[in-house]
Length: 577
Image 1 (cartoon, helix red, strand yellow):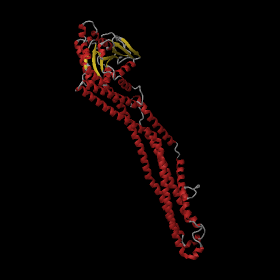
Image 2 (cartoon, helix red, strand yellow):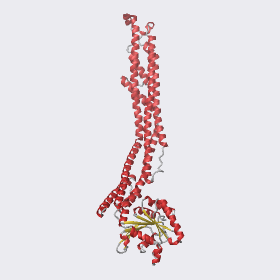
Image 3 (cartoon, helix red, strand yellow):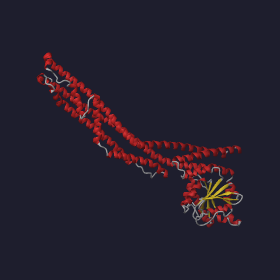
Image 4 (cartoon, helix red, strand yellow):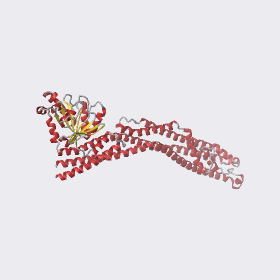
């Protein structure tokens, strides 16, 4: 690949990397709900802002490991303060200038310039100790390290690879930083001790990284001595050779191009952990919504199934009334009862006592049982929702960081509101008032179709009144003049007409009543379900919104992951041709 082609390819890689980091910042904004101070977002944004900066070598390690002494030996100048206590309380960047000067200084950040040739090719950063006494020192270190192209991690030969060092190196591995392990103060040990320490560091590092990093034993103190013999014994030559020769232009360029991909990869992994945790919660919530929906569907199906029994009981009462009515007419419309038949409303009174009253009682009993059943089932539905939601876990303990707490807050508040509202409904449920309202609506619906006034009549009395009014529409069943003209044949004919009229009227009443019951039942059932839907609606909408939000984030994560892999392949292609 020609130099021009390489330059063009590198420019394209950088352009794509900028877009990748922009997308990663946007991903952080989505998952952290616009918070700009989240460490992951800060690191990605800083990486994006410093993408065109000079190659960055960061010196990290615990305090008193000799970081400042090491840097002084590298640059050949007493630029960093040395001491046995944490002396570095800021990130210090060393850059090139024709003469030494302090370029800038602000809280937590110092930039100095030195006339050192090495600094023309790279910037060197000194960091506070990874186990600093002051916590903000460690925060500074953790924020600058992910921006490093190469990390010189300094461990002391007299206490190598401590647990705190292991934890910090694990973070470097997560951020995919290139790490050179520098075992300083090696002059404190005899040859055998030195070899034991190096073997230990190698074993531990290989186990942590999966591969063996470069390990350089040095003595920064000897390297700064005036004699050549001391410098040679310091082991510093391999370190300087690495910085001056192995990190040539091409190597530095490749590392510089790959470095932001590690930041994007680690941020992607961290966001993926949050999304996975949130997805588990949202999926659980979605199952809860499905459960509530299924509960309402099952409630409606059970109600529609079971109302058939109540409808059948009402129809059976009408059928029983028809049987009694037929028997009544057979018993009463006879020649031997001629004296009653011609007497005004005597037969009507008898019919009311023997047929209509029992019908009214039966209708009242069965419809009231149906209404009570509806009220009780509705109350059970609300109680079931309350019990189910109260059993659901709403703790944010397993969520990731503050974003988890924020995410959980809305759902917790909504679930508590639903439980509270449903609890109030259950506690204040007035069965009598609800039953009276449904019974009134049934009476009014029957009265409307029959074009009569309800007044104070119950539903059963209303049905009985409709029945009597239709059959006994004259002041008497038979008149003496009719008998004189038509003879005794009129009695069987009149009995048959009355029985036919009773059958037709009861069929009409049965159809009207069943139709009204079905209509009122459907209306009341829909009212019950709608009230429940309105109660759980905010929770349902939140879950749907969260599902959509996470789906969009997951889509963006897939795109980012694909871009990372694509850019890595492009870098590999450019530098392996």
